[in-house]
Image (cartoon, rainbow, N blue to C red; front, side):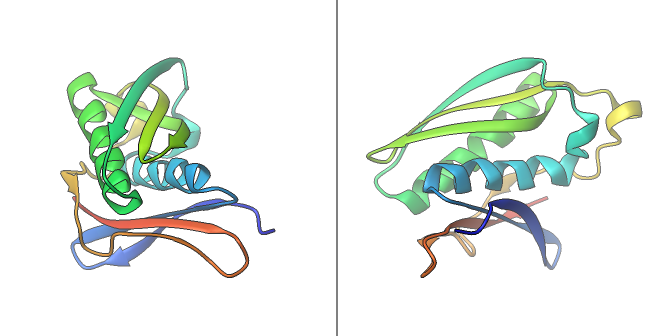
Length: 140
């Protein structure tokens, strides 16, 4: 089975985020990592504070949408950047944690401020090789 990864892909004025992994939970966590990496280089962020995040939705696609928007919300209201995520999924119920620290503009050099995940390109699927993919377009 292929190793998971977090990556960004171009999409006009917005940014696409994609996470892949051995499980859907891993793909969700890596999609959040790709989102966080659009703001600040993850290696510059110390994962010193854990923030719990809970989401529920009627299906995996809407759960990904809610999850990414919850991460954006926590970054904005707590004035934090994140570098690590952990996700547990059960019946479209997500229990997650985001680790990071208070943003330091001089050290983190934020590149963009995400406004919200969109329904555009929203996808949660399992590939033929068993790898899970979670992706969406984020308005920045």
